[in-house]
Length: 275
Length: 289
Image (cartoon, rainbow over all chains, first blue to last red; front, side, top):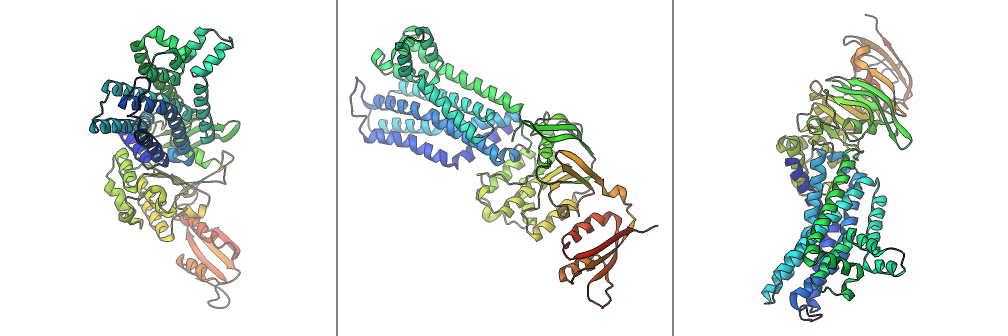
């Protein structure tokens, strides 16, 4: 256990000093600042005003940025460390492979989740100070959703990092994964369905296994559940699950997917060349 | 202590280690030499449990891959290239000390012994240190604990002469209590330290020379050297070995003669190899006892 926490702490310190972390923090902090600056809390669109609207916009933007950020920075850092000889040295120290791998994930999770959460928390606290009503139930659910999303893509990134033997390959694979998930969002699925090439059930299934689509639907479910906003497959999914059911699914599925990907990554890491 | 049994390692279709079998006992100090691509680093990574391979590697009967914590706790390792770690020097020392169960003060003290003033750089990122500073720090971390096995990949490459001298003295202090595996391109670098030379070529052991076995501790070698021109550095070095200048013209420094203790022959050849361009003739013969 000591080895695990030492490794996690090491990864946090390494990340805090990395350029990617600075950019990452500035991006999410900047989004919140910009949303305030553009007076989003004052606007009234589709019935949403104040901080609710800001949170909805923030989570939409986060959903677009966070996955690719987590994927690329993680695979760059892990595969890059391996290429540069960091693994050769640190893994010559008496640390168990499980403690190393999971410690690294925990450390990275903290650095990935914290800026996103702190930016959102900052918005909520600022709203409170300004006398704006803070929708705390929404805030809590979005926090959980961000936590699940971070874990999911971190697990996938660690899997890619253990499979790819070079930074370039890892980065390319991460980008392809993100692009694929993006292509199978509702809009593309809609296009495919219109062309009549796949059955609606298959389209819905694809939407359900695509974590990006799951986050999108969950975030929008709190916002507006109309067909025109959600898109067809999301509408069907919500119709099947109900809002509460889907909210639970949107938290459980990505966590399971991330854990499964990380576990496969660990199995591969344990049984292959380390540096 | 260390056992390699028919170790094979391939990367894709390229065989890097080809049936390596070696047994290295406690207290043996092995120079692992060979040209680039001979398989030295791969063999070391197999020993550290970092690579998968066919065959068997064990240290004191334990597998470094399956019993990592236990086995690696007794190994001190200095890599050929320092890792680009962003963490501060102080944290690296504490991290290594915590993992290895040693007192960080011991490592701090050793850095001082090696001529590295740690205070001004304690908060500096490791990656921002000079090559020599990094090497000294990694050596201090490797030696600052009760390691039964010391594995070093070109350890003295970045050290200045003074630090190199101290480093070799530190290793000499451990000579009887630890097994050493020192990888180097240049045998003369490590000849003073080792009592066995293993040469790898294309993944095979092509030479396994136990210096101490072939030459008795009391044996002596007679040596005569002719040099093309007198050089002060060579004259000083030979004087240090108690060689006499037997040139026709007194003090010309062109003909030298002396005795070498049997176990020192490798060290002597390592020294003389530095002046190979000056040497025109050399004869070494064992003296009948």
